[in-house]
Image 1 (cartoon, rainbow, N blue to C red):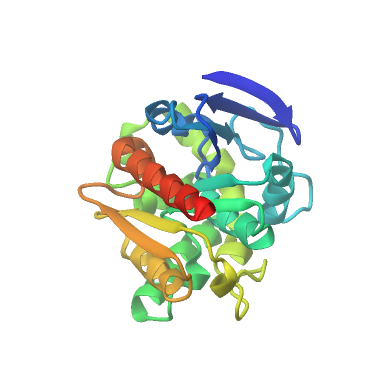
Image 2 (image 1 turned 60 degrees about the horizontal axis):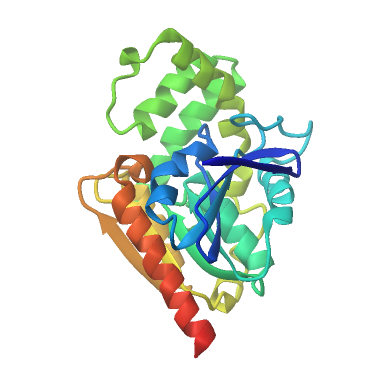
Length: 271
């Protein structure tokens, strides 16, 4: 691993020296180092750059008053170059999808790991139940009860790990970042960026892989279903025994999915 020169003020890491350039985006409350195992597996195939998103890791905070999705994409656009492969996990996957839609001529392929783009899921009782669970977290944030909001968030997305098993400093750190989670509602639930406009996803004619853990929350499969109904070149990979944090719990299948996707895109470019 090597620290890369700052771009847009973001701290980033880079691994590998392979010919395929990859920009890899982490989940909310995470940091770029979460891509380390995947990147090291693919060191001969690609050069993978993983920035810390604004407000995460060693990067500066979000600009005051800015929408977090808008601000993150603005900070990431300078990383783009012709022929780049995008990969993202959770919130990072929603950023990768937006960047690909906005810059289709530059992006060669797209790996979306458990994208939390809830607006893409078809309406159903399952979706409404999940929205109610998220709304309870937002309500505690709005009331200033950040420790309780953090507990509820972890109970929903933490894969069954007991909240009380974390040291107080970890719990406090997560609580401090809950306002970021609250600020994602308009982008993730209401498609503030307009990624679902008619014809938009249908024009994204590049290889796309949707990857999820078999044990993840049911809403993720619904998000995948909504996206798969519209993307022209899409496949789904389901990793057995994995939950939402499949990127770090089972990096091997993630690396293989990325390898296959890059190979497919390269094959199309030579055709």
